[in-house]
Image 1 (cartoon, rainbow, N blue to C red):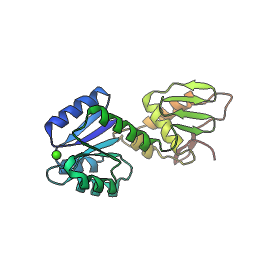
Image 2 (tube, helix red, strand yellow):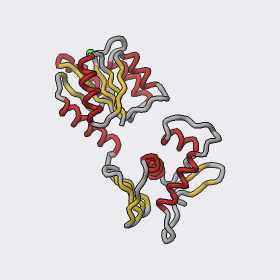
Image 3 (cartoon, helix red, strand yellow):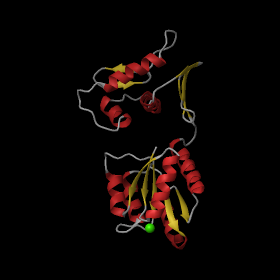
Image 4 (cartoon, helix red, strand yellow):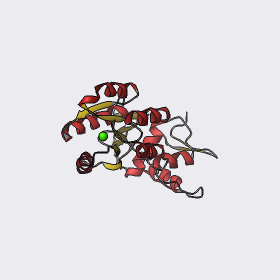
Length: 225
Ligand code: CA
């Protein structure tokens, strides 16, 4: 999980970076509105959540949010706001912030908000993905095929989760590369095929319907129909 911290107060930034790191989150820091916008617009950067101070120098936090939400409606944003900025806080929620925390805040309070926001944004209705007899528990990160437990490496997990979120779609190699691997690989690279073959070995058994079908010239699909 990677969090963008858009905040110009160095003391708050240092407190957040240390606290989040200790909780296992990776972070990036933007000290101005423009820098935050650049991070959010970059195709090389991926974040799971944004902590956005409304009182940023340059482009304000509200402007950053307005522009960003036109492009991405799903990345969760928690607004950090001083008590005097209550009207801005309301405006922030109207503009698509998922939650807000009023300064000064305790790290425990912020962490609870972050966890709740990440939970509700990634798992709106359930913490389980089920396709036929294949089951992914998104909380415990355990996969099952029928009664068999399947141990997956992180990249295999990400690949299977992508297939299970789009079980009937044909997913092209390019799309899979873009969604599962952060860095672009050349078109001749066969890493997707290699990982699909790893995954097939783990989820397909002699006595069950094989999943992850090759669609010639197009890519892969989880189920036949
Ligand atoms: Ca500020």
